[in-house]
Picture 1: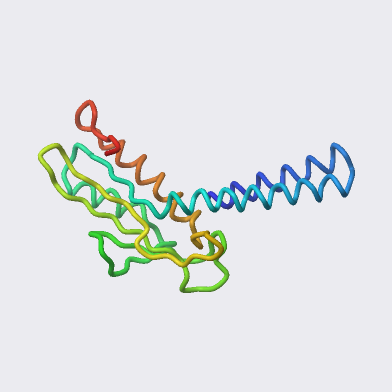
Picture 2 (picture 1 turned 90 degrees about the vertical axis):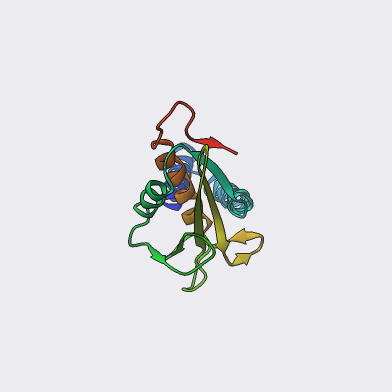
Length: 162
């Protein structure tokens, strides 16, 4: 979904550049700027995807795991891995040109006296040129997981970063 929005933004920028200037040189410069911005965004997202997100949620581990599992649809395949939940992306993503190189996300949920300590990380990935292939899929789901877990608020400060 992130790459779809990014692609639409690129098309709008290129078309607006053409309609405003009608200059092939300007459109080419805009295209190069867009490719460079895509590369920089992919590197930033890749650095972020390699780190683990730790969240504290005021709920039970069973509810957290069911909530997170419900976020993964047919474009993700459940696989074995180091977390309580492990999902491998299916299909294409940023930089993915062949099957088998999609990233795997892992999620742990451990009950503590303060709530549930949730860890979300990319446990397996293929890198190319400093970029995690399929990073758009991982980052999109991290944002969805964070939003869904913040909706599980039982008390005042339920979902905080650790």
